[in-house]
Image 1 (cartoon, rainbow, N blue to C red):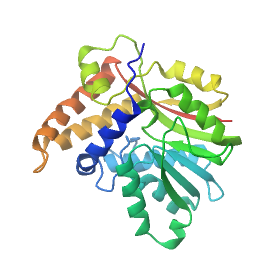
Image 2: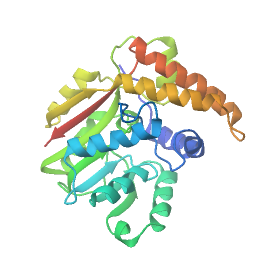
Image 3: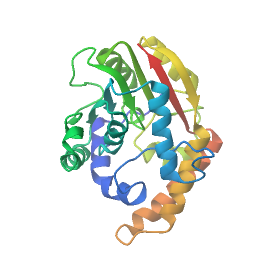
Image 4: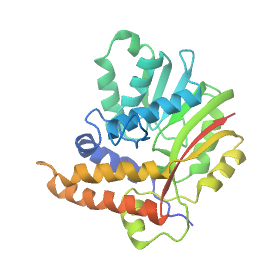
Length: 272
């Protein structure tokens, strides 16, 4: 049985960690893993952009789309996707700090983008939108934080229009008997647990009513992402020395946890 953390704990964690994440992951506030290939090499930010492009291409997002970004964080990806494709995007996030960051950043952008993008604070288990409000749902590195993941899938299904598409990624638990180091440096550090493996996640999606179009096990890319982040953290920080030392160890152990089968990463594309 998975350990159930609260949404309040998750909100407090990300409200407090925003500055560190900007220094370590991406100064513009984007916090998700990368999809590495020949075009990216081992460049982490290029791999993150590559993941975005893969998701919007495979998800069929275009200028006519009305997209809900669940777990939009500081809004970096939502604004980037809208700039690239011309689609309308609504971002929702549990962290008030990150939503405020997103709104502030949006105010500095051109009016054409302001007319297409908006941000709201809210929970993925109680989305503040009417039924069938969106043609697409997009989410990166978010659902694993929500204690009731079944409710998240039900809410996503509710606000997605008939024939719409959800494209998202999430962490997985390939095996139930997680190692002590995996439990400490992955699950406890991220206030996260899940009952879902790559296979059982697909079963949960089908139980929620979705038709699975494509499913990818991206666990090797999760390992590469954390190997990169561990190197960045090991270089230290003038303002967050102790925190960076801890994260260098934690990220190294996370990469090793992928090898042990303690944690995995999946990407799913489904139709309603």
